[in-house]
Every structure is written in C-alpha cells, then in structure tokens.
Image (cartoon, rainbow, N blue to C red; front, side, top):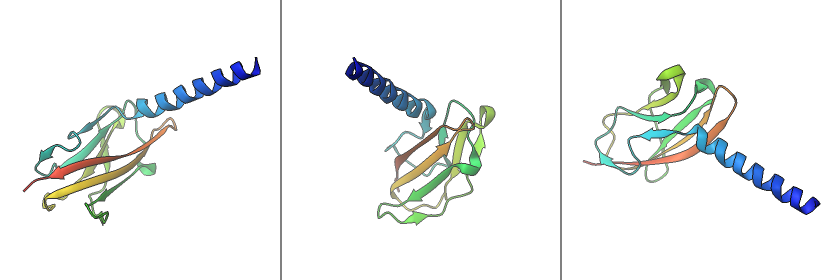
Length: 119
C-alpha cells in the first residue's frame, strides 16, 4: 500500500511540476529559428503578470559571447509580455536568448530561445 501511495504522490508531483512550467510560457515571438530581419524586440508572452525586477534575459551570439540589449520592459494585459529590445544593426548569424522569468504569483520559468538574423 505504501508503494502505491508513493507512486501516486510522485506521479502527481511530476505532473504538477510539468504543468506549472508549461503554464507560465504561453507563446513567444518571432518563432524560433525563423529567418528574418532583426526584430525590434523579442517578446515572451505569459498568462499572467511578470515580475520585471526579478526576471532576466541574456543575449548570446553563436560563440556564446554575451551581447548588449536594451532594458527589458513589460507590456500587454497586466504586464504579461516580457520584451527585450534588440540592436537593429545586429550582424547576421544565429543568436540565443537565455531567459528566466518570475511571475507576480511566485512561479518561475526559464529557457533558451534561438533565432537567426539573415543579411
């Protein structure tokens, strides 16, 4: 009986952890790996308000060197869109955005977002 209860508890915790992580990131723009000109901002859209002061975004080039971005800001309903301004003169290449966001209700999510800038 203890084994069954433990297995059920583990399974419910696994689904809860996956659900919380999946629920916080709702969409991202532009689509990953899409070839296009430099967007003005990278946008991560969440189902609820984001805590800007405790969220981070680091832009890396193909060699893993950190690059400057503009100051991240929020927009959208209740501050649910986390925007990272990009330099319009970025060189062509593959870029990665390492991000970590904390929602106002205390949930957190993190990930990598890859995109390409074509000449």
